[in-house]
Each structure stands twice: as structure tokens, then as C-alpha cells.
Image (tube, rainbow, N blue to C red; front, side, top):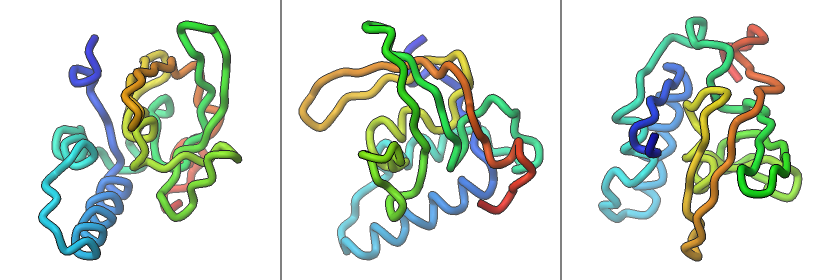
Length: 140
């Protein structure tokens, strides 16, 4: 499967917050930036009510266990909004290449992304250690 062929599922709340975030960024930049990669993801994703999202879908503030298919190394991260990003502590912005690649995927799928320096990376989602919606939190 290619990255573009992976179906993405977003909660209504995550979708609304991300659309608003992009609108604020565009207004702050005062430049017509166009949809960009995250905008394209938002346009193409299946949007579901927070209470209806499957427990194996990566949503905002999900904690993930990832596996590098080349080295078999495992890592843990939490997908967050840019204001909460602290990559050294494992909090990765949804607007980063890896964050965009993970949002809306399911356990067992492989995210693929390219870093700003042009290097390609991949990571299999091994497990969701925490998903707010699965824990009954529909407002995080």
C-alpha cells in the first residue's frame, strides 16, 4: 500500500481543531499557503464522531508504540498539537512529517514520511498505548 492509499479516519473534534489551526496559521502568515499535506489529509479523511472512532485508530494525544521495519527498534511517542510539541520527550506535532504520517492510521499499518532533509522513514504502528476516546475522553 502506498501512503496515499491508506484510508485515514479522524474524529470530528480532531478535524475541526486541525482545520481551525490551519486557518489561524494561514491568517498569521498572511500568505495564501494552499492546502498542503495536512490540508489534503483533512480533505480526504473519513470523519467520524469521537464516540464512534475505533480504538485502534491514531487520534490526537494518542500514545503509540512504533517499530522501525529496517532495524526493528521500537519507540514511543504521543501525537500532539504544535503548542505541546516536545520531541525530546516524545511529544510530536501533528504538523511534523511523522505526525502527519501517523494521524488517522490504524494499529498494524505502516506510516511513511520524508524529513525536511529528504530522508525517507517508515514506522509500523505496533500498539496504541493510550487513545483518549477509548478511555472515554472525548474532549482532550
